[in-house]
Image 1 (cartoon, one colour):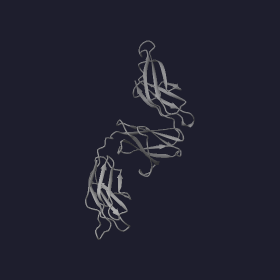
Image 2 (cartoon, rainbow, N blue to C red):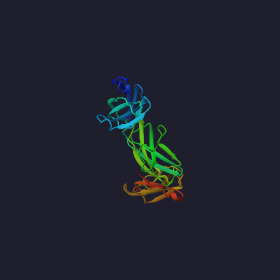
Image 3 (cartoon, rainbow, N blue to C red):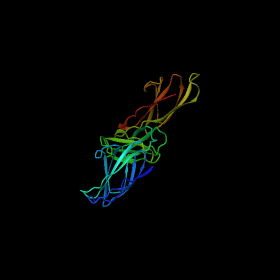
Image 4 (tube, rainbow, N blue to C red):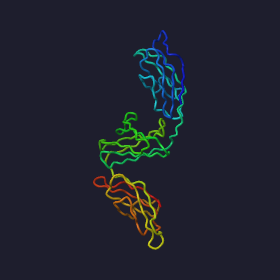
Length: 297
């Protein structure tokens, strides 16, 4: 959306030789407003103050720029704002402020939930796998820093378009980091940031994409069914432990089987088995992963 408003020319009064900006044009997205304007006489930079419509001048957020355009990017969707644009001619002389009123950001279509999982099977690389429940997305963005840092002061990275994984290399180990994660459904239309914390030590990757299926037979006839179990995993764990459960609310720890593959076939399956968990077993100090599951069949 693009609009223009003009609330007066750029000429300076005899008492004030610092001219007022004019010909303001703006464009909106769900999270931002882009302003373009013409400089008044003698102005070399500009102060922009903004806040919710009706805010008292002096109480809003402020930015200063030497350009005749500015993008304000920390706004909320479907929200109305006022802007004051003041020309700065010297340390002692400013123009009259140009007031731009009742600018409403667009409605967001990015209403899904963001989730994040961390993997670190290489001590020198953290993989952040981002999920988004709202369907298709454009890209993910993360701002990170030492635990407790203030959002806006960290390091911000953008993921590849349509990719779920972001990679963080060579972070000092044995430290806790905060990660603020959000998803852009389209340019200028992100979700809110969601905070996650992670202690950077090597870990054993938790399996995912669990599945189970009957290969042959029936569970209550003859010797019973042969059932297949499969899953996916990051890295190269030494083995996997499968735990069968008899009730859907049972914790893992029932009948267990171990395999070095990401699948296993178990014969003589009777009807009392209802689901399974699986975990990775890694070498050295990383031990075993958390249990993944249950997958109920």
